[in-house]
Image 1 (tube, rainbow over the protein chains, first blue to last red):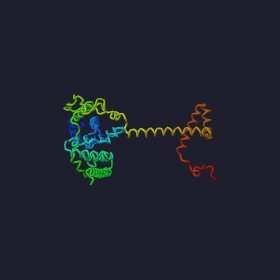
Image 2: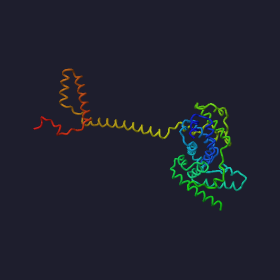
Image 3: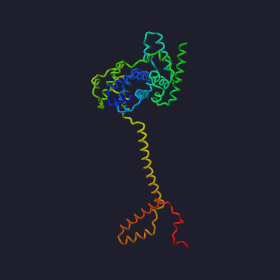
Image 4: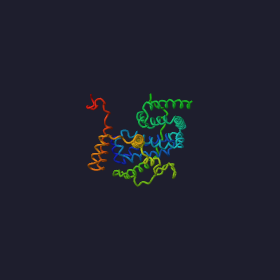
Length: 175
Length: 173
């Protein structure tokens, strides 16, 4: 990562493309879950990379670049969500925006995608965010703690609570 | 325990970002780097790329890629919380110092109004009179002011003397 950070700091376009390929899809998915809108997620992903391009010298010393990208994206999302109408919309999730299977011909897969989306939607935002960062984002609990500015113990507790809730809701759906 | 995953997450595929978004984002990054004069050679491929519209974006809506959103513009102008705090503390200190000086001058003025100017020592008065007779009233006034200033400075810097140790020898039995 150190080499990539140096190249980013020098303004190397290929390095930005490399970073994009490494984490943009995961960050985009996180933004969709956070904002409830693919269009807003598109905008904010661009804002996130623009922010890094505006002060690339900061990137030379970053140890965990994907975590850094998630942190910037999270800040951008928080600014957007300061608008209450957006906050309301953000609580609603659409399965087709989140999982490829939601639009597939396989009935079972489509149903699973819809059930999981509905269960995610029921979670409080703080827990939903942690579950998303852990499962689709691929971050460790320590990295999530750093990205969200939450104590690691709290992150672990929230994740555990969220998983228990999701499991209960999904098992009820199955019955 | 905390690392456990739901199998449902493993059986489903998260939707990736739209394929055209990559070109759009990297072109915007190119432009930003070019504006900053930072871009390396060989990194100019996206510079002349036209702005790609986002899928589902409508003209003038918040989902258009550029121009940058108002959030980002306001970011640039707003000072950070730390800077704001530092300026507030500095301003509060300056106001405090100013108020302190003002309060002291007001108290001095009240004391002077209530009890009159500080008393002059008879020794100083005699010395001033001698100087006035020799050099004129201007010199006498100058000397009087200097001596009073010295006296008040000494009073401010010194602790009150012990009355026993400073008692004049000539008055002892």
